[in-house]
Structures are given as structure tokens and as C-alpha cells.
Image (cartoon, rainbow, N blue to C red; front, side, top):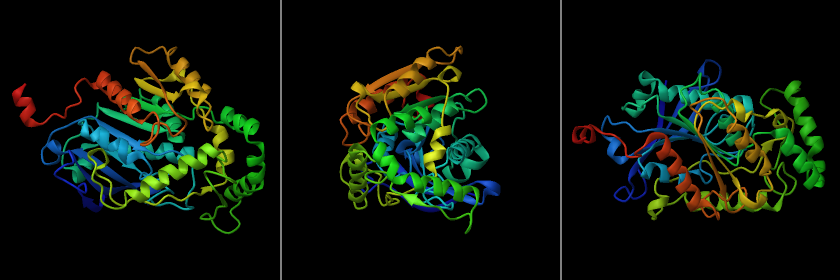
Length: 370
């Protein structure tokens, strides 16, 4: 059952070229949990049966959908794409215990759940009241979720995935862990006992399965303890607070209140991340891979996405086209306010154009005129 929790247009509907709705869909075992998401529908489709390519988006690490991503989703919707921006289970407005748990297995399942919702006309039509072309679905991810969509790109022959956008993707958790051991040994040493304790708790839940030991996700004493991580979280948190009220810039329309940022993560992620890995030679769909130029990213060393992109170029599949983008700034450079935001948006739209042709949504009227 699809649950519409609320419905709202942008703060200034006359200015916004899209409509944003909030709803949830079942997830997990027997649909016991809920994935909460925003849909961004181009205005010329909101009251018609027209269709456009769909972009499925989720945030990185322990961040909710409200942290930075509405700026990007708004740009996509303005360009004529339908966007579904969701919170993973255990994060943001979605359900799931313990809270702030980041699991690659669960998050991959959540992407597939939303993908199946999008590509099942009998399901998505209950809420969206319009058709979504199952042959035109893009998975989008950044940082940790960038690694997830890169992994799912290797299953595009089995799943209805048209293309993937992987920004600063974590494609090799073990290599990145060693990068942090070399560069931030004291930071990891401070939380080592919490990581081990929470990992053991996940295996032997002495209290109950809803319990976890949490540490900061960003900043001093956290999983990502660098100054870059702390400043990036501060930027995204400021963005969420500013957009809880009305907005007036066209590029920022469609915000409203969303889940607040919680700078915590279940410490077992320190072990979980070691198993996160994907092989670029197995990619089976068009993919855009982006990373910070001049090794400007201290959170996910740029050699990881660069090596993944190089492997993608070796993929023995005629469907695979690989586009790369080295962006300005650090790990947060592709977010609104980052040095690479505008160029990054332009590159992503160019990639989508190369995959689908015209980004303009197709309505009955446009079909008749063609």
C-alpha cells in the first residue's frame, strides 16, 4: 500500500516549474517498513498522463534526503525529468530500527524497492496517476550511495536500469579504510572500541535488536573525523535549516521542511564498509563517474572512483558508455555552495541528454505536435 503522507507544491508555485509531493512505500520483510520520499514532477506532467525519464536519488552515509539533494533534484525537475528522492531505512523520515544504521545490504535493497515501484505501472499509478517508462530509469548516488548505484550498474542486465550517475562513489571500502588509517589514525583510534562494541552488539543483541552504539558521522570523534568532513556537514546542515522556511530563488524551489540532520551513525559501519566493493569491468549500462580534481577529496580518495571508471572502460558490453567528470572542490564540491556545483549539474544534464536525447517531458500535446 502506498501512503501519501502529505502533498505540497513549492513555496512559490507560480515560479516553480515542478510539483513536489511527499509519500511512502512499503519496504523490508513483508513490507513492514516504510520508505519516505519526495517526488518532483515537471509541471507539464503533473496534471497529464505524459511521461519523462525518472531519476531515483538517495543521499550518502547517514544523511537524510533534505541535506543538499533538493537543490540537485530541483535542477533535474526543471530540466523535465521526474525525480524520486528517498530516505533509506533507518534514516531521515523512513522507518527502521536501530536508527542511523548504515548497511550496504539494506540500502541496496531499498534502491531496488524504489526501482520496482517505479517500473510497476499498477503500483506507481496509484499515487503518481501517470505512466513512467520502465525503459527510462536512472539511479543516482553520491559518496556511500554512489558506491551502491555503481554496484547496481553491474546488474543492469537483470534490473530495469537505463543509466547510473555515481558521484564521488565509494567503490572500494577496504582501500578507503586504509586511506583513513594512514591519514587519520588518531581519529579512528578514538572510536575503535565503539566500532567493535557495536559490531558485537549486532551479532549478539544483549538488549534487543533495536539497540546500537552511535558515534558522530562527521567531525571530531567521528567515522569521518577530518576538518573537511566537519565543514561539509556544517554546510549541509545550514542548508537544511535555511530551507525549513519559505524559499524564493527559482533554483531552490520545492523545499519545505524535511528531516533534520543528525550527526550520528551506528558505529558498526566501521566494519560494514570493509565489504563495500564493486567491479567496473562488470558494469552493464551507461554510467557517469565523477571525482574531485587534484585529489581534493580527503574522505574518499580520488584514486578509487578513477580506478573504477578506468575499469568501466574495459567492460565488454556494447551498452556501456562511460562518461567521466573531474569536479572542483572537495568531497562536498558537487553540492549547492560547493566549487563544482554548477559545472557538475551541467555535466549531469549533458550525460542524461546523451542517454535519452531531449530532456523535455512528453505529453499528449507534444506527441500530437510531432
